[in-house]
Structures are given as structure tokens and as C-alpha cells.
Length: 184
Ligand SMILES: Nc1nc2c(c(=O)[nH]1)N(C=O)[C@@H](CNc1ccc(C(=O)N[C@@H](CCC(=O)O)C(=O)O)cc1)CN2
Ligand SMILES: Nc1ncnc2c1ncn2[C@@H]1O[C@H](COP(=O)(O)OP(=O)(O)OP(=O)(O)O)[C@@H](O)[C@H]1O
Image 1 (cartoon, rainbow, N blue to C red):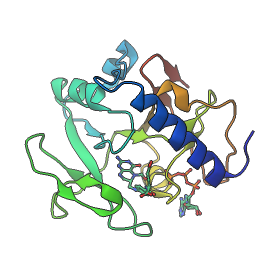
Image 2: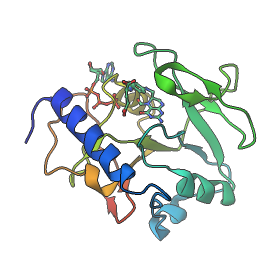
Image 3: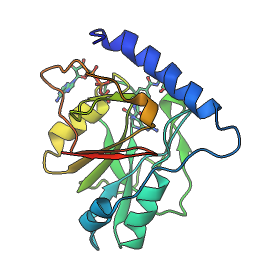
Image 4: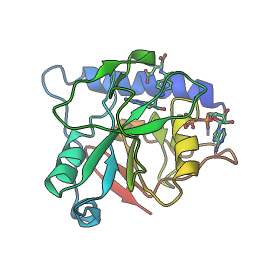
């Protein structure tokens, strides 16, 4: 197991980007299993994200949520230190360029508490541990919304045998890839 999260992050971002580059025309789609659809209900708030670079695109999951009558929120950050906020986003609304090359809702949009959080992963393991960007944005969001269902989204090549877990790391409830789903 690689214990240094920084080293692992660099390696797994490269692995992810190599995988995506092998699909120059059309990237594979993240699977939407019945267990995910069963969780969706009219009026639930689902946090999605706008993928950047080689990140897996959660759109199939977000689309299923919209079809089930869920409200979509997107993460909004202003830098590495201030906490992430989940802001309402109507699927037609414009996105604004933010830090780290992100596209985010306008910062005056309504803040909402999510029931389901789709989170982009840099790496994951079969025990549902995750590695993110390292700013602690999702770690802190999971601590702020402990009752939300935490779903990681990644390409299958981002799986590793085991991840080092720090005391603040909160495991996921499920992980979605283009080939499989892992559930707690
Ligand atoms: N698409 C997306 N949105 C997101 C996140 C994310 O990981 N992906 N976040 C997750 O917390 C939050 C934003 N926080 C972030 C914190 C650090 C970096 C960052 O260090 N990015 C690297 C390169 C990223 C890569 O290649 O994967 C950089 O800017 O050098 C990005 C986002 C909320 N929105
Ligand atoms: N609940 C929390 N409250 C305050 N700080 C936190 C909390 N959780 C994590 N942090 C801080 O966030 C930083 C990043 O943690 P870590 O390297 O584990 O991020 P990560 O696994 O890449 O996940 P993330 O996607 O959340 O960035 C650490 O410095 C940690 O102290």
C-alpha cells in the first residue's frame, strides 16, 4: 500500500488521464444500477458535480435523479480553505468559472442540504475508502451532512488494493464506475 497520499494522488491522476485518453471519441458511461434508482425519490436533493479533466462524468446518475423528481445541487468553492457549499442549480442555468478550473453555479444561488452526495474520486478501494483532491472539501462536507448517502464516482482503473485512512476520512456507502458498483 502506498502510504503517502500525495504520491498516490499523482499516480492515480495520471492513471485516470491515461485511461480517458484511450477513448478519444467517446468515453464509457458510468453505470446506473437499480439499487441507485431505488434510493431516488421526488423532492430529494442530489449533489452532482461538473467533471473536469479526466474525471468520470456523473451525468447518467444526475439524469436518473432528475427523472425521479430530485433537485440537483452542485458544489461551490472559493479556494482550498473555505468549506464547500452545495448550491441549487437548474439544469438550464449557466455555470461560472471558479478556482481550480471548476465550473460552478452562481454564488448567490440557494444553499441546500444534500440527501445524496455524488463525489468525484481520485482513487478508491474495495472497502469503500476514498482519496480526493486533498483540500478536504468533501471530507468536511461529509462531516457537515453525516446522514447523506455518499456515492463515489470514478473509472474502474482508479481502484487500488488498499488506501491509507486518516482519522477524519469518512468511508463511502457506494462507488460507481463504468464496469461495476460497490455497495456497503
Ligand atoms: N469536478 C469537481 N468538482 C469539485 C471537486 C472535484 O474534485 N471535482 N472538488 C473536490 O474537492 C471540490 C473543489 N475542490 C478542489 C480542490 C482541489 C482541486 C485541485 O487541487 N485540483 C488539481 C488538479 C485536479 C486533477 O487533475 O484531478 C489542480 O488544480 O492542480 C480541485 C478541486 C468541489 N468541486
Ligand atoms: N472534518 C474535517 N474538519 C476539518 N478539516 C478536515 C476535516 N476532514 C479533513 N480535513 C482536512 O482536510 C485535509 C485533506 O485531507 P485528505 O488528504 O484526507 O483529503 P482527501 O482524502 O483527498 O479528500 P477530499 O476530497 O476531502 O479533499 C487534511 O488536512 C485534513 O486535516
